[in-house]
Length: 334
Image 1 (spheres, helix red, strand yellow):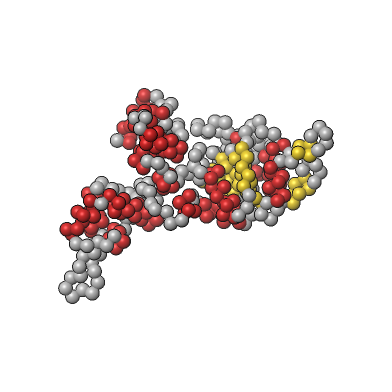
Image 2: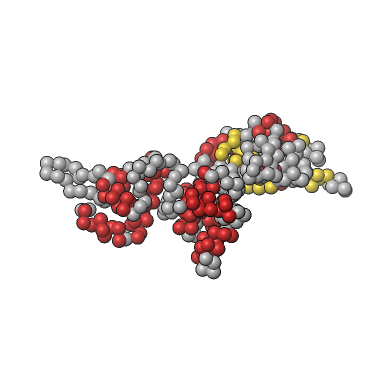
């Protein structure tokens, strides 16, 4: 492709989107755009000079295009999480939904090690546990907990007539499957002692007197918003967990996967804006939660055409902010 054909390439929105996606993919995987690689992928070759046997490919074409479009900013520091990538065509169903740490989680559970996923609301912890069960070909049981959840949620109970009413945990522990203890850091720490004993020992005696050995395909996963040290400024209804309980788990930081957020987004421009506001709030230490739900719900609302951009902002990402805070955020994203 010669220099004159670059204009034709830039006139194609489809080819430009593919080039931008490849650019961001290189940044995520390599830590740099690797323009020479982009030139090769998109056929930006300069004819061999006299006496040369190979085509000249130095990345100049893709660099010039992306710089002109404002995608590449000279001198920008590159990190694997920034900038967020645009949607890319998926090669298969699993990779489009897979969190960057999904395979690490899979490794731990395959060694029968309980895993605790720690991350903000809407970061895909429950979805990851569900996909884990699908990957392993076993059943999936999620159960949410709070301070008032009784031990019977784990153990089951003996009814007034003397009959044992088993719990979902009893069934998964005995017959196999992925058990998700959701909102673990909101549970009563004393209730977690039962769960801790069962997981640690590999067997447990239920209220009907039956001592059950954990099935060989039983896998334990917990999800939490904090690291088990108690409430923080964003998640105030959280408990400090016993060190013995925490010690049973491999604990994985499970942050937002912005690449996947863009893939499932109904509107990419809105999602990029949400991610920019989220990063600004993190930088400014503003107490707020801006999850991918804001991307999805806001994108749907904008596509429906009933609300303006400003109205969607007010109802999703800016809700609850006072005027001073709002001005700080807007100044930061500008």
